[in-house]
Image 1 (spheres, rainbow, N blue to C red):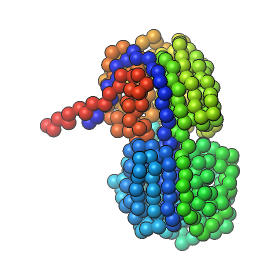
Image 2 (image 1 turned 120 degrees about the vertical axis):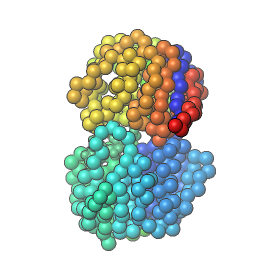
Image 3 (image 1 turned 90 degrees about the horizontal axis):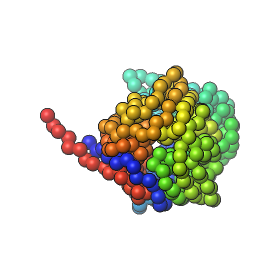
Image 4 (image 1 turned 180 degrees about the vertical axis):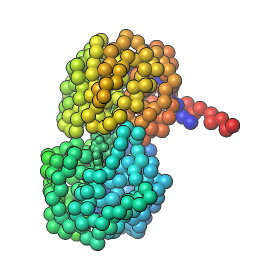
Length: 422
Ligand code: EPZ
């Protein structure tokens, strides 16, 4: 099993470049199934969730080739809609495949999605929307079956602005007969990226980034070349890293308007952030507490920055409160931070953090992707050595996080702990 070993006390300096967004590439890989011609995607991050999604696409008959961070896919040879359960369970995003496979092949069988342990991950909004478009949905012994000779346009009101349900239903509507309107949609930048990708292939989607998305059904999508937007959550993670470790860095390949809530809130903690067109200069002296951080759907404070923000505020002068409003139970990292001496209490959806001068290195376990990254961040300024285990969670969404931090002066290394077969 691999672990990350962090030696605290090194300030950060230098420059880092952000890769394409994980939460863009995953729905865009699913959407590539809608094309009958070549699909080229640039700035693809080298992360394990992409590997899993590419394995799934290859199982479905798609030809895949990769040249560094550029992917070339040929979905014209798509031949089945049965996704292998072993791959389906590896990450939640495989649920995005329902929409495109229904649209392309008229039927799909998926097992309930896997993914991070950050609380219940229902798919009722996905299924309700697909049913309203005429799909026959059945669920049996852990599998979901959907069938429709031809989906029909529909008016859909999402009970919650779910990112995945918005994306799945956008993709399902591409080849549907007539027009579809989806209300109360998610407005994340990754939804806009997906709309741009689909429209480059000849789809007719509009409204992404607003509360209502409209789709006119078409019959064919052609080839496309698309560069992903940068990963705003990795940008936020790097800003928090400077906040914890101290120092000054430049972050390249950033779209600042994708992080307005994050930049505003982290400035409140005392981190100085200067914006340029596609980069940020970040520096810090002292971190101070902030009264409240409330996670919300975009453009609110992203839930995917919640654990990293908690790492930062564990070192702040004063008492901070973080309220997690998107997921039930996204506090798996609190017990790990407390092993380092953090003073955090949970009260319902809120975490009350009493900042301390120093945390102490400890042996920790990454409970999920963003929490794992947050534990590494906490170790950057801890006394002594912090060991983070279960780092496969981190590798799902960060390209060799230890290399990125090493290049900024941190002492973080990946060790291959021996697996002792008893
Ligand atoms: C996407 O997950 C992201 N993943 C998550 O990022 C992110 O945390 C989340 O959106 C919220 O921003 C990808 O894009 C691949 P949701 P998703 O559907 O689509 C409830 C990361 O670290 N809900 O917006 O699964 C659900 O229970 C990951 O990069 C229903 O009730 O999130 C949750 O409380 C973690 N019924 C809320 O909506 C449904 O049918 C938000 O979920 C669907 C969702």
